[in-house]
Length: 226
Image (cartoon, rainbow, N blue to C red; front, side, top):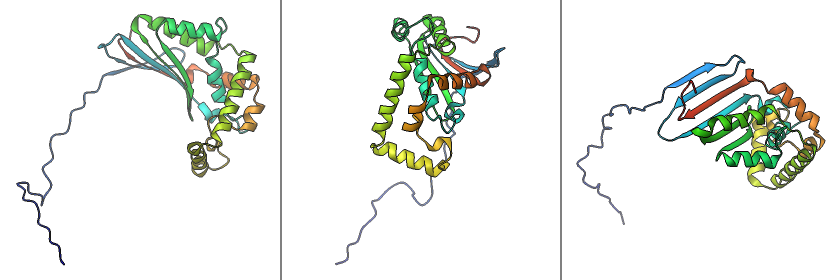
């Protein structure tokens, strides 16, 4: 038996595409930019609807600055920078951030290490001062380093049986080749992390942290002059 179908009647002529409409207008904020005397570039957007400010400080390099036998050092550096400063224990640093109602995080990516912060405009100066303290006055505590390294080793062991991590590892080896830094996971390997010392972190910090490779982005209820 043959089944026939009839087209549903329509007032729309579907034999040709409809005419194009006007291009949508996307309002984009004005971005100001400047360069400090130390070489750090700063980009900003003023947005005054809420009394909030977000800023980030991005240092180029990240995992690309690692050596093949020191994989995972960049990730441990960012972990250690949040483990207190010269004048604050980890607990005191955490309390100082919480008292401002702010958030400050550090993360390592393939090509950069980035500090991000979010705060009320009235606490901007204090939050920026804490960010500066974190970046420029690391504590390098031996006990905190041992704990951070053990946490990293535990995470590497857990990822060894996690399908997404296994898939990402295979993908990266195919994309970059087995000898490239980025063919390995961001945490490093069991062998490399086990061999890392606090001096390795200090060496990476000394070689890779500089205002000449830093870019700051700031957006919110704050002017360029402020």
